[in-house]
Structure formats: C-alpha cells, structure tokens
Amino acid sequence: MTDKPENPRIRYLKAGVTLAAVTMVCLTLIFTVSSFTANVIAAGKIKARNAKYAKLFDPALYDNDPEAECRLVPGPGNNDMEVMAVRKGDHPVGYIVSYSIAGGYSTPFAMLAGVTSEGKITYADITVFNETPGLGDKVLRSKGRFLDTLSGTSLSTHSFNVKKDGGDFDYFTGATVTPRAVVRSTGKMLEQLRDLKLEAYPACGSK
Image (cartoon, rainbow, N blue to C red; front, side, top):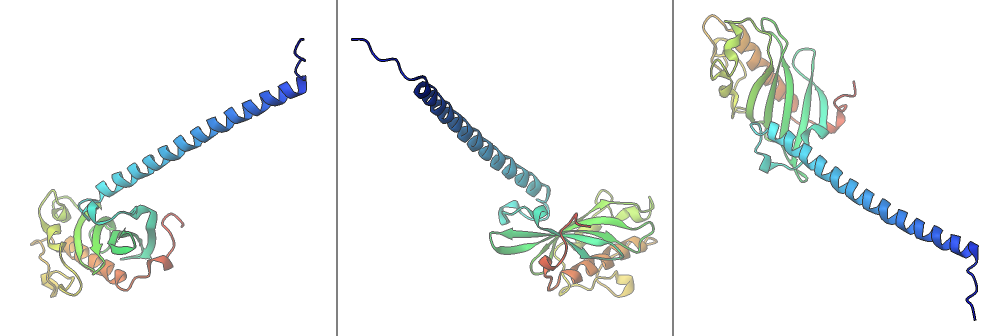
C-alpha cells in the first residue's frame, strides 16, 4: 500500500510556517544584539563624558549624563550659561557650568566650572581665551595658579571681587582687568545658581 501524496497546499503552509519561525528567531537575535550594543555604546559615551569632567567632580560621585540634562540659564554679560545637572540617582550633587567672562580686554571668553549643590566651586578652568598676550593671559593655568584661588570658594565665604576693589581675590600688578573680569563673572555665575529651578529653563541647543 503506497502513501498518499501530501497535499501541495499543506506542504506550502508548512514551509511558510517554518520560514516565519526562522525569521522571528533571527529578528529576535538581531534586536537583542542591537539593544545590547546600543546600551554598551551609551554607557561608553557617558563614561567618556564623565572622564572629561573628572577635574570638576569625582566620577564616582555621580552616575547620570550631565550633558543630557543641560539647560540655558542667563549668565554674566549678554550670554547664556550652559548649566548641566550632576546627580547620583535622585540625589543632586551639583552643576557643571560653562559661562562667559565679561569685562576683560578682549572678552567674552569662556570658562568651565564645577559647583556643588551647596554653591562651592570645585574646580574652574578657561576653555576659550581671547585676552592680550603678556597681560591678561596670566590668568591661564599654563601661566600660573590664579584659577586655583577659585577652588573651594562660595558666595557665603568670599567677596567676588579683587582685593584692589575690596574683594578677597588677588590680581596681577599692572594687569587687573582680566582677573577682575574672571572673579566678578564667576561671582555672578554663582548668584544665578542660587535657588535655581533648572527645569524652568530651555534645554541646551533649543535656541
């Protein structure tokens, strides 16, 4: 007795089901690998960004991506500051602030500072500089330690002016303009951070 030939429709249906199952398995593998790769890449980007800000905040102190929480806040002069929130979970650690310096010889130039949630500067450095060589450039870290005098200071402990103007910060003989601009603009930056509701301001890149 011979077997009855399989109905071609059933054979095609079985082949279709098998092909669909193989396709679903392949797509599942692709999406799983893609998702895993995307997470690894995102984590790598955050780690790289945090390393860039390591002088401002110990990377072990926070776990968010500050650049993803950047807001434009009115700053010294006519330029907005870029203010980035630094957090450990839901706990606020402070801010990373990019701000302009107004009132120098060839300003504005730009600085980057870390500021704790209590309003204390952790570290500050100049990122863009336009001042006159031989005069204003003495504020650069490559020329001296002037910027170190900002670390550890806050509005509650220091008067943000140079000593020549009754403040607490040193200046250079014959070159008061740039130190004065740095100190005053940094003080105004700190004033803007007091009682700051960061979420009330537009996101960086929105203007």
